[in-house]
Length: 101
Image (cartoon, rainbow, N blue to C red):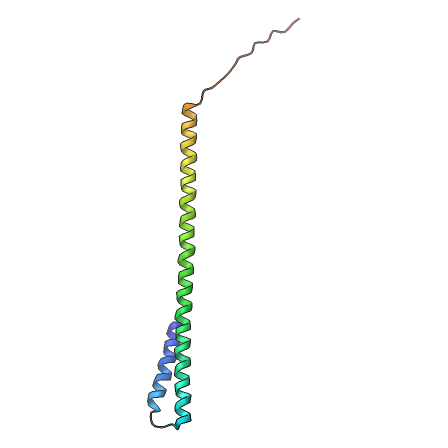
């Protein structure tokens, strides 16, 4: 996209250079306006690309952070299970029942 915009800007610039001293004041004004428009389109494309890149970077950072949080929770859960199994005591009682005949 940026390449197309730059090609258009170069095309306008070539037209402007080729048209030097061939236009009236009104024609020169048209060329100047075309140049300004091309510059604005190019700047907008650059801003859009920058915004898209920034949004993608932010989303990637959020995904990484979420992964780190999940990993930490999993590690903590595994440690708790390991510690709980080592320190817990088993209370079993055996109940003997006798049946009356």
